[in-house]
Length: 234
Ligand SMILES: Nc1ncnc2c1ncn2[C@@H]1O[C@H](COP(=O)(O)OP(=O)(O)OP(=O)(O)O)[C@@H](O)[C@H]1O
Image 1 (cartoon, rainbow, N blue to C red):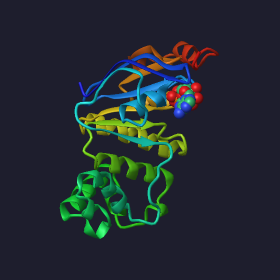
Image 2 (image 1 turned 45 degrees about the horizontal axis):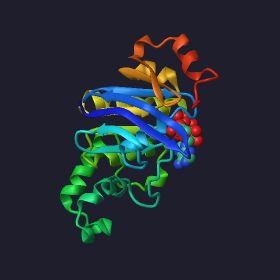
Image 3 (image 1 turned 45 degrees about the vertical axis):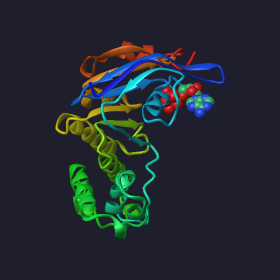
Image 4 (image 1 turned 90 degrees about the vertical axis):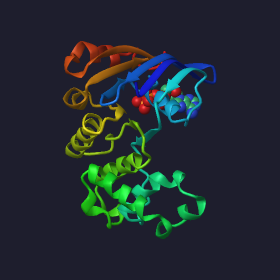
């Protein structure tokens, strides 16, 4: 099991946000998290990558977990390949991580392979800021791949993209799971994208899993339940 979360608990100022959250994502599987604003989806993913400290529960990620966000945060004046290479900076000696000219050749090659996996090898030398929003999100995914993660998390990766770019990015996440063997979990606010691309859908209400089923089986009653008046944190 590449990602296994059990009994995750988190409160902010005495207000419970995660109330015993469980999640399994297997290698090769693409799981979409759905739920109303405030139901705890982002907090759960942020706990996995250490951006938040859980109050209780266990998280196992196999090897490394990497995450992409709605806010893409590329360095716009740097080239696409420099941005992707930055995913590996933590593995380089400090001296070599200071400037792209000092990055080792093997790292460039690895970054190029990551860029190829997201279909953007041809844009390697362009400045990142010149790419479209959808292309920039794919570069951010390549940067995450360059971290050599076995678990890839995405927090609303397509909320700022037009429908066609969103479809492409979510299809890419599904493909990275199925052909790349990654365990992929994404928070989406578009149930249609989940039905079309995910293997499983996990629904949260008030920091607990209240739905876990095959994406193709998602029905309107499930969505009413997830997004109804009580769907957010209690
Ligand atoms: N750093 C923080 N300090 C205090 N409260 C927080 C913090 N981060 C999140 N919260 C609160 O925790 C609750 C859950 O937030 P979270 O972002 O996990 O929900 P979400 O399901 O991802 O919502 P959304 O769909 O709006 O992104 C919200 O009520 C939010 O205001």
